Image 1 (cartoon, one colour):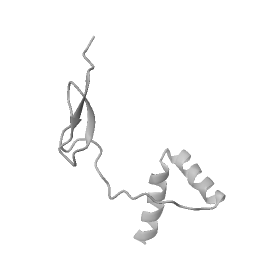
Image 2: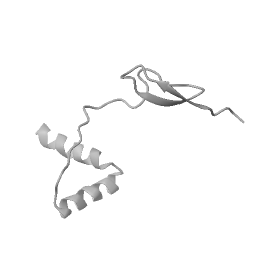
Image 3: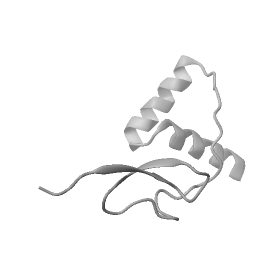
Image 4: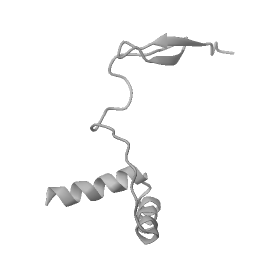
Length: 78
């Protein structure tokens, strides 16, 4: 059986802790690339609007963030 030991490593960026396997590890530039700045918001909408957003999420296999981002980008690109 292969060794699957886990160790804790410190990333080169911002001193964040990360779990790494004995093979591979934290590498500068690895992982998902950023598409922008993340900010937490609270959004109040009617039940009908939330239902439309949830339907679009299911129909297009997208997250709420992706659907709302698409709507905002479409609005502001006009």
